[in-house]
Amino acid sequence: MAHLVLGYPTLEQSIRTAETYIKAGCAMLELQIPFSHPTADGSVITRACRVAVEEQQVRVGDCLAAIQVLRQRYPEQEMMVMTYLNRMYTYGLGSFYEALQALRIRHLIVPDLPVQSQKEGPLRELDATGLAYGVKLVPVLAANVSVARLEQLLAAGYDCFYLMSDFKITGSRFSLHPGLIDITRRIRQRQPAARVGIGFGIQTPEQVRAVLEVADCAIIGSALIEAQETGNLENYFRNIGPATTAGA
Image (cartoon, rainbow, N blue to C red; front, side, top):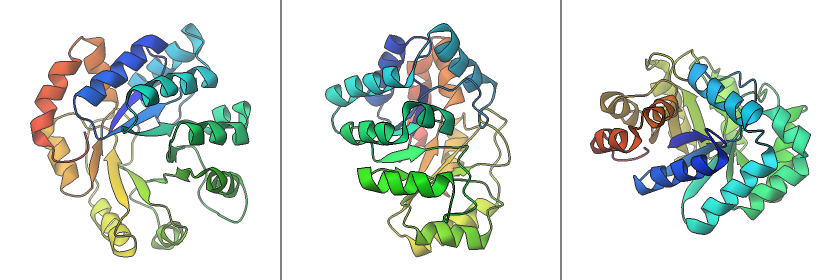
């Protein structure tokens, strides 16, 4: 799964970048609607977000229009949207989900969503609204998630999980926490059809191979932005591609 920030360095260029990802054979796109203070992200993605928001003045509606262009050109490409709560509530939760439904986006990643309780708060509201529009949340989990909490999420019917490779932010030095093996095993026992992706810090073919021994897909973001900035994106995909049998 390949991540990009919509609107970086411009909205038009981000569409072309997404097309490069698709032509390189990425199974899934993670399309980030930029936010000025992306708390889960490291310096590379934070800088890209701030260029998109502050310099390019990219708004949620602009990003949805860009996704519409991609959907029209690549109707079968799987795409997930990633954003932060502030952007969704400012746009209007119902309107946001309605737009995702129209774009045939089936999964939404919200890294700053509190997931401690499904009885009240933003998680319940997003779940209920998403259910009405056929959009499922993708829980973002670290290796210290409790067994009880993981069981609650599995019982709730989530079918895709985003695991942080270790306790860090995006773009950090890669390491793979050994606890992820047990988490993935529990997910597959309870939800055999659920997909598990691992991200944060993945850069090299060797790291992709290590992730694919545990999960269904490797999620790459910061390394792709850096490759794009140096004019090395297509070469990066050529180098990374032979290492993979799934994911990106």
